[in-house]
Amino acid sequence: MAASPTRPTPGAQALRRDAEALIRQGHDASDPGSSLPSSASLRQTLHELRVHQIELEMQNEELSRTQHALALERARYFELYDMAPVAYCSVSQKGLIVQSNLQASMQFGLARSALMGRRFTAFIHRNAQDLYYRLKKDLLESGASQSGEFELVRHDGSTFWALLQMSVGQDEAGDALLLIVLVDLSERRQVQAQRLELAERLEKISTRLPGMVFQFRLRRDGSAHFPYASGAIAQIYGVSAAQALADAAPVFAALHPDDHDRVLGSLMESAHGVTPWVQEYRVRSADGTLRWVHSNALAQREADGGTLWHGFATDITQRKLTEEELATHRAEVARGETLQRLRELNAQNQNAREDERRHVAREIHDELGQQLTALRLGLLLTEVRFCPQDPALANQVADMKGLVDRAIQGVRGVATQLRPAALDLGLIPALEWLCADFSKRTGLPCTMRAHASAVVLAADRAVLVFRIVQESLTNITRYAGASQVAVTLSRTGTRQVKPGQQQAYGLRLEVRDDGQGFDVAAARLKKTFGLLGMRERANTLGAQLSIQSRLGQGTRISLTIPLDNAPPKEMP
Image 1 (cartoon, rainbow, N blue to C red):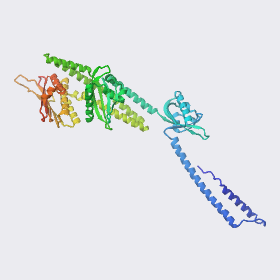
Image 2 (cartoon, rainbow, N blue to C red):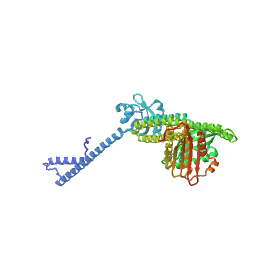
Image 3 (cartoon, rainbow, N blue to C red):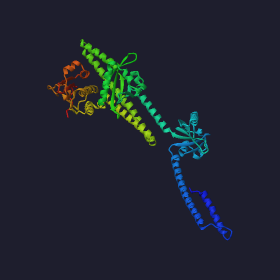
Image 4 (cartoon, one colour):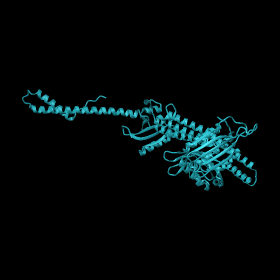
């Protein structure tokens, strides 16, 4: 921009008049009566003129620099205001748009020249007009900035949501001027809608599953709550999901007094070792009714030192009633009733439990696992589409992805704890997986040797053998203090006893450890559930169970399982 001519200062004008007078006097020097100034006066006047000339040149240079700086500031203003990623509008007290930037023009779908002079309220949805006028009134009366979320209307009639932040300024005439900032909320609202939809989908899935799906968090300070709990929590504990979200105390208050300390202790033990939490306990409802609950969850250490469990809880009252009936039949056997009937009931109970495990594992893996995977894909799509433009949204989506990943891992772990997929491949792959998982969780070496690869057990019998080994490894983890464990599966029997006469073949399973051992007779008198469960499963198999242990000399558990009389294939 060219600099405009600088007007002479008053001092310079006076000097100019004096100089012009001197020139006229010089022209009239022939007049004898005139008085001429001295040469010294002329030199002084000339000096002053030169000084003022230099001052004027310096003033012109300063003015040029000021004009250049003003041009730079105008350019910066254009970059900050006109090219800003959010929309800016200046609205007169009469409600007319007097200034806007390019983003506002794009938001409203009109060229900036066409936007000038239009009423700002023409772009506000009729349902939001009252809110706008109320905020405008408060702004003009108090002078304090106002803000609110509005549904706006573009020139083509389409709508979008934006956050309006309004402050008051003044125009050149000193009248009030509304300064409005518009932040587009369309993408954020879309993400919120997707999150709500995904949450509703997860809730629908959880309502189809048997029992309650939950996340339970134990904070570092000892407080606890449920970040997520399906609606079944009300049926089991008589507590709403909202109550459990704030505080887990009402859930623990519903526990039977005789089970309360045991449940808390098992949680502390699981948190300390970050081990799976599996418990059966009683819950007392408000009317005094007791129900049995089975909970199974995987623990996970959080960055702040707290512990988060992913799991489910199911009502097993009916199963407990069946077990009580079984216990009654056991008492009848002790009084002379038939042992065969007791074993049939026990086998029925074992099959029912395995069917229950299989069903719950399949439902969790297939339904919840697939939907969580779909949920993660939805978050990934959201991240690709919207996060590059919104860093805050990117952090939020990343956190959500982390939660979904942990939930998927938890679902897979719970399903595996219920029924490992390796069971579908046969007994030997299942036992190999069990040993590998034991070593991974405990850090103890657990070797597996199988010499019966050609033997195939029926699925229901293979599950019983698997559960016996699983219970043995659990006891080793809790009590043995061992440094190594070995599992061996071999074949027993011979091909032929006499010419033309064959002997039945069998399998021999051994689980050995070099731990501290225990008193077998004393343990038998205590009737511990772990050993009792192994014996019951062995009876169901028609197998012989032998437990040999001495203090300080480790333990050996042997199981001899009869097979069909048909000759097996050759050993490899």
